Amino acid sequence: MTISISLTVSVPLHGNYDHIHLPPVPLPLLSGPSPPSSVSWSRRWTIVRSTSGFSGMDNNASSSLFPLHRCKTLHLVRHAQGIHNVEGEKDYKAYLSPELFDAHLTHLGWDQVDNLRKHVHACGLAKKIDLVITSPLLRTMQTAAGVFGGDSYADGLSAPPLMVANAGNSGRPAISSLNCPPFIAVEYCREHLGVHPCDKRRSISEYHHLFPAVDFSLIEDNEDIFWKADIREANEEVAARGMKFINWLWTRKEKEIAIVTHSGFLFHTLNMFGNDCHPVIKKEISKHFANCELRSMVLFDRSMLGQDSSSSNYPGRIPRGVDLPSDVAHEKHPEKGGMN
Image (tube, rainbow, N blue to C red; front, side, top):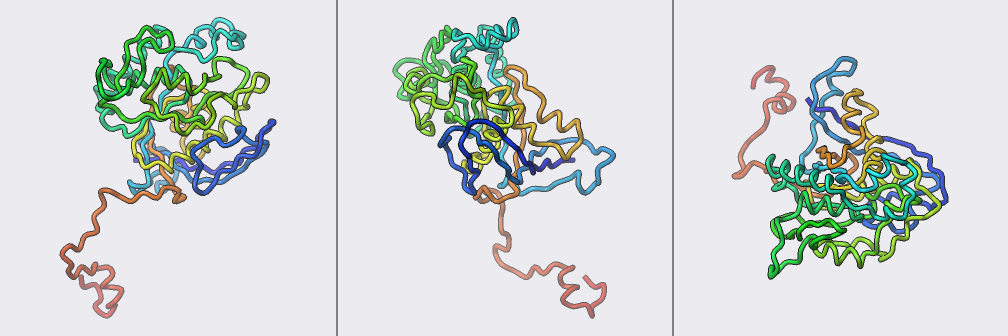
């Protein structure tokens, strides 16, 4: 049985930000200072999860059927353990340390990456993914490359490496961009903006050197213009940015997308979903992610934002022939009574 989780929300936001508009055809870039001073919207997206029936919900409401070509499968991943996770656990004030700027993965974090990589290959997921979207921070791109990238890179290959050797002082060998999906960096799915140096990104020119095969073309500014030293993005503003990201996904043709991002971004974005379903399903969707946790969900568009046609539907009647259904025939010829 499936539960359809629809979103209709109104979110008041506060802060020194310009207005963000959620357009009918979403824009692929953060085009100005991030979330607004106030915004409200009604969007019709659905996340589909498998579950058993439960009391208290009408049977008709607990099952949903959606056209496949109006769905996307999202494989959501929080980055592996970073140095900021370790230091912040010891002392929350450590998040203010400039030494944690654009935090990289720990040795344990890389072990987590290796184990998730084994899982996505063992379960067959690695061969299904059409696109990998990553937040443009060091720890997310390290995680994305390590989990979904190719094998070890060898000099002389025609394609550039996905990640160079020792990227971010990782001590790891270079990773190939062959035999893996394309990778694209998107500002929308960054962690909370501002105040914490670990959430401030490097220049895109630096990242180009570290991750040569990652596509940074959707990021307009070389320097990080969104991170402010004295303004921390509010939870509601992260959620608004997250919904704009979901909106943008419908501009992509890919059907199975891996998204490597951050705990706060995932929690506040996904918490917008599931308010009309069983609490267990709500928790499955929006509970905090562990480091390097992967959670797969199906996103359905009720609003016709996506324009893709089906690749598997077949029109029938080839060759053409008489095919009047019996129930329609009965309506056209009521004098025939119950004849089929």
